[in-house]
Length: 347
Ligand code: DAH
Image (cartoon, rainbow, N blue to C red; front, side, top):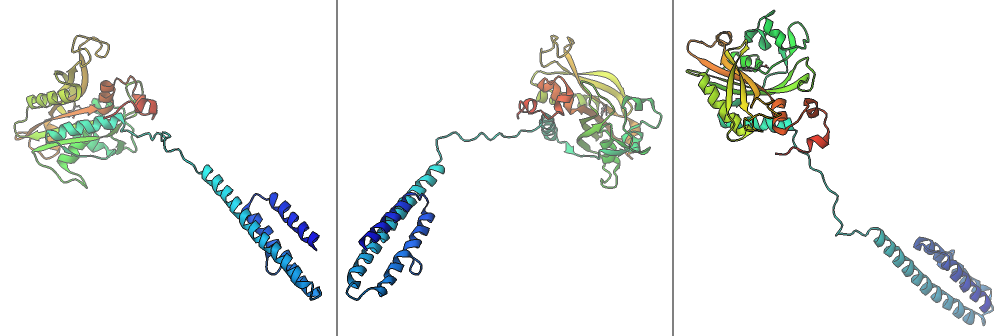
């Protein structure tokens, strides 16, 4: 009998030695200690078959085995669970002194930076923002701006027509008409008028400095007694703010159907201070925008009396300003979404 018990102990020890998982150990424990099906419990049941005088000795041995097994499995369980916890802790360990992964922070597009800067400057001078639609009628984009059908000035702007009446606007100047005359969404506005109209415009143009889609910023001021001097004063303020103190403006005669007289506006070269360099092509001046006194016909088209009111208007290309200010050589770089380029510009 003692032999049998000893063999069972050894069997338990050998089986336990091969186990590395606490759940498996629990199954082994059940094999021996389960009240109903356990092998040690079964031994107890064998007691019935023994002679009454043999029973106390047998009971004692089996009880000792049971006590030993209980302690043994408790110890095994503790050992395995400790090992398992140690493994889990090791796997979940973090080094709080490790540098955190760098979170790259997005930035505004150079076009947006310039547009915001211009809006800031002009709203500081009292301009209100008005945005017109990108799909425009022939009337608002051309006819009302004193550029009727077959007017040669239409050739200055290669136009994408959607239908004979509808087109992708070629200039934000259409916003002047929508604001002054009104449309289905905009009420008619009477002077004093002082608006800034930013937005995308479209022309069938494509080279290093022209893109089929680009952005403009239009300005319009109409009131009693507005003169070209008011325009130049405002432009000086704009040039100083955008290109730096000491930058001067110069007006050159030009032609736009919706202004009379019309001018091209140059700023003195902010790179060389006017001495002549690569940026200003050795002229000392850089062309930045078109402007002029609002043509009488445009005011009449909008129901504003040109004998009482006068006004000036201007329009500039945002990409052009961005390219000049940031030294971007090709307009396409602004539309390629290359982060190596875009991440260089910050407010
Ligand atoms: N609309 C003109 C263009 O796209 C720019 C322009 C010139 C706007 C003179 C004006 C202006 O308001 O007065 O070429």
